[in-house]
Amino acid sequence: MADKKARLTVDGIEEAIELPVYSGTEGPDVIDVRPLTGKGLFTYDPGFVSTAACESKITYIDGEKGILLHGGYPIEQLADNSDYLEVCYLLLNGELPNAEEKEQFSNIVKKHTMVHEQMSHFFNGFRRDAHPMAIMVACVGALSAFYHDSLDINDAHHREVCAFRLIAKMPTLAAMCYKYSIGQPFMYPRNDLGYAENFLHMMFGTPCEEYKPSPVLARAMDRIFLLHADHEQNASTSTVRLAGSSGANPFACISSGIAALWGPAHGGANEAVLNMLEQIGDEDKIPEFIERAKDPEDPFRLMGFGHRVYRNFDPRAKVMKATCDQVLAELGVDDEPLLRIAKRLEQIALEDPYFVERKLYPNVDFYSGIILKAIGIPTSMFTVIFALSRTPGWISHWNEFHSSPNRIGRPRQLYTGPQKRDYPA
Image (cartoon, rainbow, N blue to C red; front, side, top):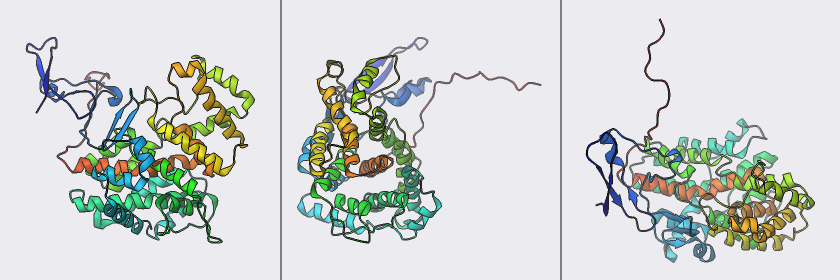
């Protein structure tokens, strides 16, 4: 039932068109424009930036106030008190688990961490220098060839099993991408380790000797996963929903999300931060690049500052900054040139009136890029880790779509091509 009504008058249409107006639990009211199609009209909204394409209970963002809520819980509180798997449970179920539910959920995920041994042969079809995201798109989509027992999208249990499998297997596949690129043997997952610890083990362990992840690095890795777990209706999540609307299997839908995330305008931001630091190259050159960033005629932009959604500050950045400081202290890598450049840029952005007035604060991508670099993860793997982190958000939105009445997505267009014409005789 609509809370209010809006009326639209259009030249050439005698009566005003009545449009229902709905109110959510948070955020602005939404005008239902579906009645316009009956009058032969569509709305025009490039990029869908002013259009609510779905109803969701999972995540809410208020960019003006710097608010990010998962199931109503502020991201800062979750980062301080929760862990990644608990947030996965929250995104999937809408409520935090009790102790028994959390243990059960974690144990189920652990039991699904291995991938079919045949998957290891897939990697031989790729060049060693293939971008890890290319491999992830292929391998995640290929999972549907191995798990025919859970592909009925109309079966709630099948959807749940797929969620477990995807959350569990993404770290394994991600680590396999890295190991393949450097010519080292794949490391099998270990069920005696936590989620982030296991990922670091598969990334940096070898059969030669036991690898013991530092608790500080494992906690940092878990926070990176947690802070990227979901971000409402972004490009990749909307892609997953749109692919899901066709009835495609969940592995194909998540693969489509990975493909969308691969774009440098979306998931490649923290990789772009490291590329920018390498471009600057030397602390003495920082003033030059700062001036270039302030010049509207210069195409150079400082990456990792400001955010398209957050007009005030990125609520995840404060948490990530503290984590960044802990990691750098743990590893003692303050002498690393790129990290020194990053710390100096951070100081300038927090003090320079140009950046402060425009609210161009360091964002979560800036700090996560520094952390991953310090841990020893190559920049080509940054977006892969983003995809790993975002998987519970994607699968939660996919599941939400299929848990309620739905229809296939079909955006409209404003056609500006030639009018009907006859083929020349």
